[in-house]
Length: 266
Image (cartoon, rainbow, N blue to C red; front, side, top):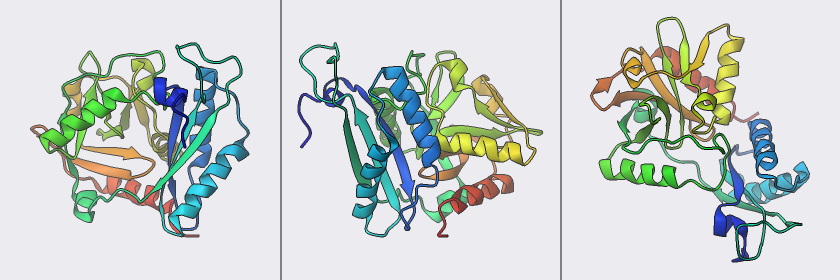
């Protein structure tokens, strides 16, 4: 049972990673997840744990999936602490796991694209941007808006009306001679996902140009195609944002197949 004094519960003092697991129990993108987790550990000043501590928790989650593909959520907190914000001098970290099935996106949506809306509240710059920390209230509120509006996903903008990311996915667009994804580091907002990193490396290895900068929302209207991605869903084409519509490009579906292939048996 989780200690009610746990600082992850009390203050969001911790990190998490959501891992897609194959039927064989592999986590193909673990290296990227572990690297980001370690970055977060350093930034928050959490105790550095050996990788085997995480691997043991993942193994328990994989066992709970009983040979089925699924998701294991890994959560690291600073552990129990007293009252007040100041962490204990010698924290005892908590490592938790949670296993579940893969989210279901119908084949028509995966091939024909989803509908996305514009979320009302912007993503404000923050000092902990880029970390998968446990304070996700902006995303919770945005996701409530998505459900209320009946969209499949919601696009979050910066305070300057620049597209940044969806509530739980990163954003890519195809222009005439290049791919584009927002520069979340420059925006000091959002999280650069593990699948985003994999796709950028994959496209660069194919000799394709990927621009990473901040652009006004109006520029997105001129894109040839748009898609979202994360490490659990893979690549998900977007066909409509408010009144704007895009075709689902063959090149986007090719990227979808490449991402899906990471999780095939073998």
